[in-house]
Image (cartoon, rainbow, N blue to C red; front, side, top):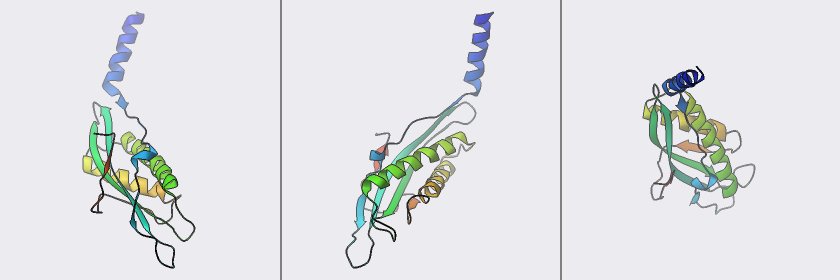
Length: 150
């Protein structure tokens, strides 16, 4: 009887389970100064480009897509200087939370999942980094990183 119950539970989990997980490390966001901070006023701009794999194992809502994410951060905003370490940590935290939100949701269309991921990441980053931008790749001349590595 016990074995039958365990077998039924395993079948139920296999039929309904959705699995997602992972952690996008700060090192995935390699920021490069793109606009120098020269001049009398605060300014400058740094950019990180990362291809991030969003993957959900599910029988009813599978998803596997690479999302191109460009994060732009002012080197110095009107409040303070923003170091690469701070920008990387905040981008990593926002990417983790945004990925969990998207992967828990019902979306199965790759382009829409990526759009939701970028929008949620931007919403979260705006809470801690004034002037931040999150888009698909726009800036030419940078070598994007991938997570996980190819």
